[in-house]
Length: 224
Length: 227
Image 1 (cartoon, rainbow over the protein chains, first blue to last red):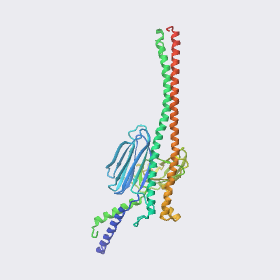
Image 2: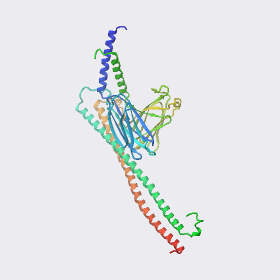
Image 3: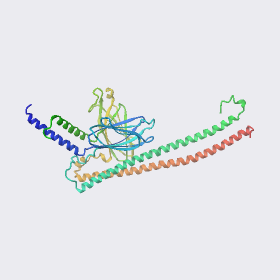
Image 4: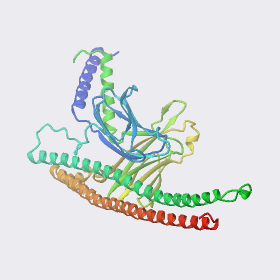
């Protein structure tokens, strides 16, 4: 109410700075990060995870089933309005990249509801945006020296080596889980089959003997 | 951009503030819901001598306002970490916001379990808790800006340090891989041996029971004077 002219000018200046801040934030790679989690999903259960994502962020969801049953799980990714961005049933491994079209909470769920008694171990890696820069104030305007750019490319290459190692470790865990399952199954099945064999052969003999017993005593025979 | 009205101006500020808020929340972005006495377990398969840092933040569901309260003092979470042999490495109670650290001494599957043992949740009959969780393993646990400040490193030296840490983690993972492969091979060889011995044993049992059957029936029929 004092001086509307200067207030308007202040508001306009603030608006301009606000716009610049907005543009700057959009241009600078946002400090995102990755969440890599391995959890156990019990039978007939569904577990959901949520993350708040800003518009325009490139995100990747990657999951793999490590142990349990047929090594498959249902996965579903929804945007803040509930629209399903990704839905797959009984998948063992998949990778899905998307760009957030709006701000808000994105939800992804893993479901083992189709399984009656096997619980599964699921690994997922949810990468949001770029990794945080090494230095907090790394909005460099000047070009990197050759040494620095070589370091950056080595860093990226090593990151992909670590990523491949993780995938290899998961596949190996899956293979090892199958091998251990096979080992126990072979043990139980062998013992079971030996017992069944003995029971059947002894039973056959006694049954046969009962056919040839005297007719007089059949009524009093309870059975072999 | 001069001469903009009040409405779009406010919207612009709101957008900028929202983006700023989202930028500063950092790596503790992922969250999930947990029930009252529910226990959630996470598995980390790591080589030995690897540091793991986990940090979490909890929010309680307010049934009346139907919103998650920003922070609730007095809410506790119990964190339990077990090593691959089942031995408890860490078992501690933390507050509503906490940070736990442990270093693995045996390679393998470490289990990190979280559960809330707060009785206050029974009062708010909603019984739902939102847990923000972030787990960093190995070289991700290093806080590079802190290391740079402490050792007074230039940017290039810090990058070299980071690369060294990454390579060290790769080496540890490779060693662990060798150990795992040996276990896998032992399991496969054990299965192979078991299949071999059991097929021989079953053939022997089959032959022996066949012989027994014939002899028993022969003596039975001879007694019955049918043969």
